[in-house]
Image 1: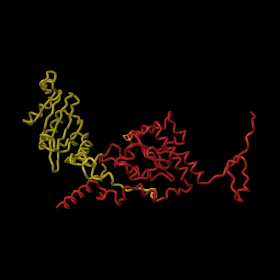
Image 2 (image 1 turned 60 degrees about the horizontal axis):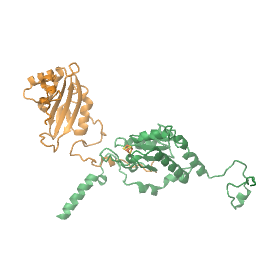
Image 3 (image 1 turned 30 degrees about the horizontal axis):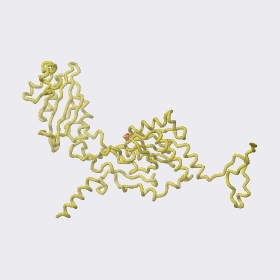
Image 4 (image 1 turned 60 degrees about the vertical axis):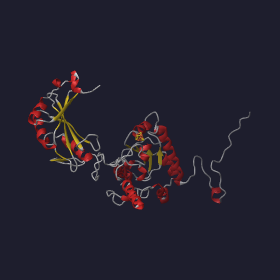
Length: 178
Length: 222
Ligand code: SF4
């Protein structure tokens, strides 16, 4: 049994509320897209991400819900290493859109979304901290959760789970010293 | 059966020294060593510093609450200022970013002070063998008592406090001389001290060491 959402009647594309997406598709023909459970997903190339997001912002997507990242290293069938996922919402029409964008080593770089949605600030800092994605134009691209002197990006798949010894890297306080 | 009046007993066996023979103690007066008196006071008024970072902290709260009632052992006065505490209870995992805080709070506590490492995570890192979690706080601060369990039941923590009280009574001194024993500390130190905490020390780095070992064995084969 196939679980292809587009074939099930209650989840047909006709019911998908995607006026914002249609506007995007008109401006950028040939975008890879799919629908799952009534929600539209679209893949935007990194080169046109800034312009596409600006158009989406103007089309009424006033809320950036989340920015996350996936490392597809050694993933079956993957063609790019990092997949950035932007979850957008239009709070007036309830339209939701998932924008994905694939980038590669070395120096995975995408434009920052902070000028459009201020909520991107810490979300992008987190993606920088844990995956090492550079966001050009970010006002303050510092680490968010790891200590500032940390040098690696620990959620990358090629970073060892137990780290490179950073967790042992502290002065020892003995009884005499304390 | 005849009921006899209790015979007056000497609580302190009389020594045969000439000084003791002359010592006439009035009623309700006891003689002890100053060290023992100080330890007796200290052990019955431990003020814990609750360093509760994870789930073990919930058990720590339960220990302090009405059912288990840590007040029975004189240790119910949790204080959130390290200056007022003499017993640090580390309850939960400590991550890399938290360890400098832990060390600072430990240094801020005034002597005499003791430390209980509560739970598998605080003692060894527990199941969290990851880059961010410190694998046992005893690598970086002195620990007096370890409590096993995940989480330990309140009874176990109370047992640790009772054991710590025994230890304080046994080896406590009024000037804190018992903390000076370097040999005791050396055994606990699995790791040596690094000068700059921010530089990566290759000798303590398991990944680098594994790579070096692989290179050495490869060179030996060749
Ligand atoms: S030992 Fe268990 S209960 Fe305690 S902090 Fe670790 S995981 Fe939580």
